[in-house]
Amino acid sequence: MKEKYLINARLIDPKNNMDEFGGLIVDSKGQIKAAGKKVANGNLPSGAEKIDLKKQVLIPGIVDMRVFVGEPGYEYKENFRTLSDAALSGGVTSVVSMPNTSPVIDNVSMVDFLKRRGRDKSKINIFPAATLTKNAEGKQMTEFGLLKRKGIIAFTDGTKTIQDPEVMSRIMNLASQSQTLIMQHAEDNILSKNGLINEGEISTRLGLKGIPFLAEKIIVERDLSFLEEYYCRYHISQISSAKTISVIKKAKKDGKIFTAGVSINNLSLNENDIGDFKTFLKLSPPLRTENDRLALVESVNDGTVDVIVSDHKPQDEESKRLTFAQAATGATGVETLLPLCLELFHNKSVKLKKLIASITSNPAKILGINKGSFDKGSDADLCVFDINKAWVVDKNKLKSKSKNTPVENRKLQGQVLKTFVKGELSYERV
Image (cartoon, rainbow, N blue to C red; front, side, top):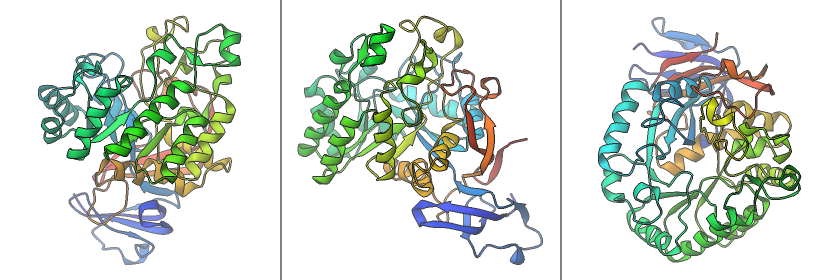
């Protein structure tokens, strides 16, 4: 591969506190050689490949910490190839794949299969997560040490929560000894049993069983209490309520070290968007009130929440074209993650550098991977986007195998133009 010079770009790299016009050099190994205002058009070698980005924004490739892929077991919803295509069109170059497959990712042979399929079928970086417990049943812990040595980056039961406090305390104790990253989906099963949407006026009007904010808050409070005794790398996957934010703020103020994420769906939508039983908006955690949404947005702005995820969970049309109670939970999102983040910038809700950090350097730091920055010697995983480009979401143009987007027909401002993985142009909008 020839050296590439990406010039005439606005470079934003929160890790290195960079927001300036300049360029970036990719060496023959696909790694970043230099980045910044010193890389200009006037000093390029004659034999180098030159790419003029025409003042568009250049950021590190997006790192999405919560993505579901259908392999194995649900290939009809999404496979590694279609996930890769969808991710690249959204500027996402690295994903943490959830272990809720069939069978689940809870043993070494399944990890080997996953890594092999990801390597053969995907152009993006797949960082697999394994289950916290055998078969994600919340009872018996998986072999953390063995699975970590095979390349597992984090442990989570995905859409399930460890309900038994004794099991969770043992998990956090073991994780504290092995520096294992634990990612918890916070929802109490008893309080949320048979729940479909946020508990409140909308659920009452629609006649749907509600999920109270307490179902989330109670699990977060419990786990943060354990964190006092067992210091481990603990991450709350997605929070959805203002009350939970209050708990997290207090815990961080008290000196507890942990991280928290939020789904872009909960930052961009609220329970009113469900309208008359729109099943594409049946999500977990559920969309909550506008006050909750505003509190979540502010928590990103003030640093209480560390990362924004797509919570990309493809569902085939047959799984969604049912009554609200019967419809599957989840939505696609990897393709619209960045544009929806930019919506928060354009409406002056969140500073641009804070948004970029929450989808690049912050998740990379939590995961302990050399991604999400323009550091010299790191892989040239890059995203180029037009910050002002207006477009409308059309599900038929999405590259994901499933088309269950919660933002169909939404007018957005900001669109990905090019995506590079290890210096190679892997996606270009035509």
